[in-house]
Amino acid sequence: MKRLIALFLSVCLISMLAACSSEGAESSSGSESGTISTTGSQSETESKTEETDTDTSEETDNKTADSDNISSGSNILVAYFSCTGTTEQIAGWIADETGASIYEIIPETPYTEDDLNYNDSSSRANQEQADSSARPAISGSVENIEQYDVIFLGYPIWHGQAPRIISTFLESYDFSGVTIIPFCTSHSSGIGSSAENLHDLCSDTVTWLDGQRFSGDATESDVVEWVESLELPESEVHTVGEFDFETKTVLLNSGYEMPIMGLGTYSLTDEECAVSIAALLEAGGRLIDTAYMYGNEAAVGQAIRNSDVPREEIFVITKFYPNQYSYAADAIDAALEKMGLDYIDMILLHHPGDGDVEAYLALEQAVTDGKVHSIGLSNWYVEELEEFLPQVNITPALVQNEIHPYYQENDVIPYIQSLGIVVQGWYPLGGRGYTSELLNDETITAIAESHGVSSAQVILRWNLQKGVVVIPGSSDPDHIRENLDLFGFELTDEEMEQINALDRNEKHDWY
Image (cartoon, rainbow, N blue to C red):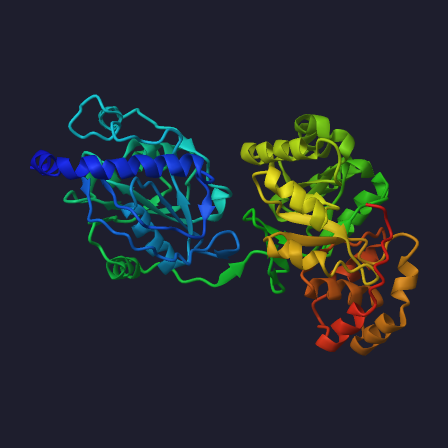
């Protein structure tokens, strides 16, 4: 019966598959392949082998969520393979309904009309479907796959099964603990064994929900009704870059949570550094900032290993100096060895320099290899970012710059944040040689007195309310504890404006 249907539709398929070929070529060369997107254009139809759908020219506006808007507790991704648009349209409707991120699985070698000739047993698609070991290569990958715990997986039906590129996708990632919900597009075949046969490609810890088949004339209401029947957990939206003052963390665009206040170790000697970190961890602090040029990475690692605090609770940032950019891959391994850690939470490039793009690309590879979780930049401003970002693949999770009441970067901070990048301020208390003047500023001391807190606490709280992570440096355990105690008071809008008025555009270091 399936063969008869295919023969009956063969004339239609010839013209429709031509559209499939052009769509695949455009996806591969005309846009970024295999990337998370927030919009989708559904202007063509799915029609290959047993998948035969009606034509549609309607464009839908996918209000999908990417790394700017991730649901905590039920982070959802819609991943799909589409040839001429029908599976893409269903995927878009699912993403629109769930607020999910959306990812198109794009073949490295696009399928041509001849590749998809159902009646030619030697065609590429037929050969792949006949070979259970076939694994067509995928162009691109899903960044931060670990942030998703629910994945809708969409595909057309080919010979009653999912295309082998779906097998490639499932075997490319560790989906342990994830819930996968398959859906397919087909003229007549149900989802049936096409979904069940995918189960063995993943670990036993994956939860598979029953899938759904949609025909070419499926409507958005059909899709919405199905999604609602799944009773997916509703969860509070957690926005990238938005500070959570209850957990005292911020969600990075890399999918990791980072504390919003911690300890800077600049100028701390090994012994001072170890004592300071011990005081930080004892007081509940979990963010530590170091750098190759500080000369204390080994002390940082030793203090972490000597602590009773679980490693996964501690967020460690280090930075590479420009003289390391030419051998960044080796520098990553050296930093891991020096600190005695299995991974580094974040590595930043210390400031712009020769070879910085190549060094950043090495950091991107380290993320892929699991050596580093997040990457970013230090001392990059608007002009530098505009030049740098088009040359790299992973958007920095963090930009760390000098920020304090006398140097506020009020034009730079909003720009960085608009890119989904978290801002962190070094020298939050003015920096060596300037701290005393800042802490004794009359405006700040008056605000501090009204809240019954210290000037340092006022300045650090001002930063937090501007969305700037703070890493004040100190070797004094009392000051370290005080610098973490920032949540028992809140600055008013008037007080924020009073501190904003102190800006002198007075930079205290040359970076």
